[in-house]
Length: 150
Length: 129
Image 1 (spheres, helix red, strand yellow):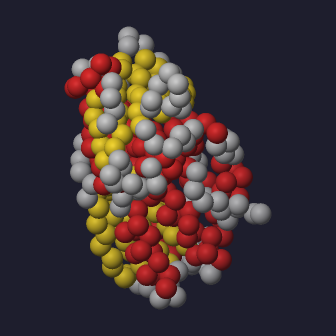
Image 2 (cartoon, chains in turn cyan, brown):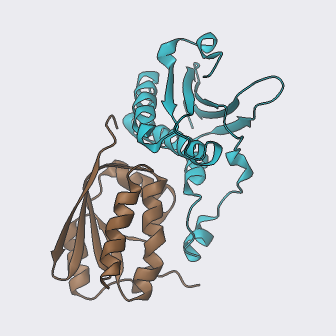
Image 3 (cartoon, chains in turn red, cyan):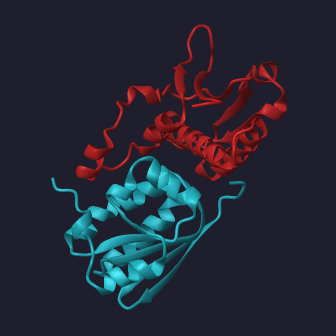
């Protein structure tokens, strides 16, 4: 489905999944393994894995509306100082950065519900960028970056 | 972290406290199972719930969301949802967003049980509106 995925990088650095929550564990296992190999300790690798899980959960829900006939892919592109995760999809663009940051004190005070996944992504990752599909690219790309030293 | 998508709950009632023992991975796929279990307890008019995380290896925001969905109603009725026996990696997810401010999280189940015995439900954890 992701047409240029083979051009991007080695297949070992890419995993694709069906848009179903039952696939999330495959993404988690992939990211956790890659984060450990990159050099993060288990605690850091767990947090990065969680952030990617949250991004994929939102994607399945908001971009694909749980359509199990669709799929998306996740790549890892490590550099010397950055661990970069890209989530590629052809669903309806959903930019998590459009969701305003949550004040957790207010959140608890009002007993609010939902929106915690994006808050986790923001807490864990150092950079989040979103490029919706357009003339130059036929995929939405959510990029989550974690620096070696935070 | 390496694991599958399995999740199960064992339910025991001890001294009128509904104890839920979570095992496995709690994410968007499995959170409805927990939601249903808590719904069943509340549906029976019971409001003292102790959740033991001893065998839980993973939680995402979908799991946190289940507790947020019920805590207000449970406390309004004079009960509480107390959380106990978390592995550090699970506690760190609660801690990441500040959940210990709102939820009573104990290191061991027996501490939570003792609080229920003493009638310490929610008073000190309520955030005043």
